[in-house]
Amino acid sequence: MEKGIGDWIEDFKSYLEIERNLSPATVDGYVSDLGRFAKFLEEQGLGADGVSVDPADVDRKLIRRYLAGLARGHKPATVERAIASIRSFYRYLMREGAVESNPAALARAPKKKQRLPAVLPVDEVFALLDSPPEDMILGRRDRAILELFYGSGLRLSELVGLDVDDVDLAERLVRVRGKGAKERLVPLGEEALNWVQEFFRGPRADILHERPCEHLFPTRRGSGMTRQAFWYLIKKHAQAAGIHKTISPHTLRHAFATHLLNHGADLRVVQMLLGHSDLSTTQIYTHVARERLKQLHSQHHPRA
Image (cartoon, rainbow, N blue to C red; front, top):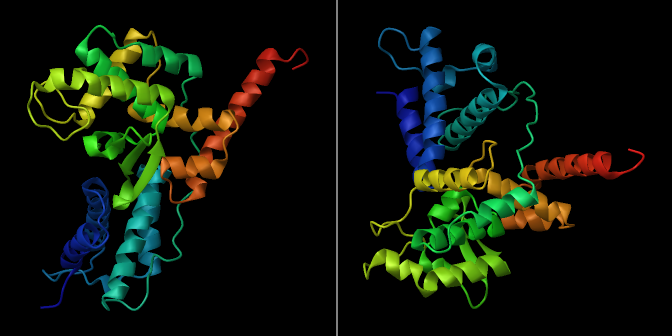
């Protein structure tokens, strides 16, 4: 029996997991987008009478109709992701010889308004870093976490995945496993280095009570911290620091990049530190830095 679109989506999922080595969240995003697209095709009458939809029956007009309907009820970012998923799916089908061309190759999403990431000013970041109580074991652990997070500009998933062996205190480097299993080395600043060293000198052993744990930052249960635990940790210390705006773990990554640019760092250096494969992804931070300079000028220049 001929393969239908559902079978091909399952094959594509395996390809993303095994050959592309993408994260489970990214794979789920692709599969979700393609599942919605397959449902639309069935509603259009393709694959009727119990016969599965053949991806080769899909043309550009059909994809444009799908995207137009999607745009009426969803944000531009959702439409853009759907295009990327369908386009990637058809590239895979061409590779497998299931179709001769990619009907999504020329598809375009509506322009989306560029959102600048919210950035904490330096004084609020310092207040956040100073928030964990130094006279408590978990307080010293949290201080090491926050200093490393802000000092290295890591993604939350990268921070969660750090093991003890990933930190080289002698060389002042952290080995980070980023998107697509790509590794990069990120330098440890002096403050981050001091607090991680302090954490290794006593608090970490006190938390574990001789239990083995390869994770850099363990919980009282002796396991690695979850993403949710990091979210809670940052919100708790932000509240204690008197920061009332909504912040997330990604806020510290934004602050890391913007503060570097504001102090004269080269954009390509920031790109390497953040682990961005494309410079255009990093360029959004130049807009943030520019806005900050405008604010400073209007606040402090006598003729502004």
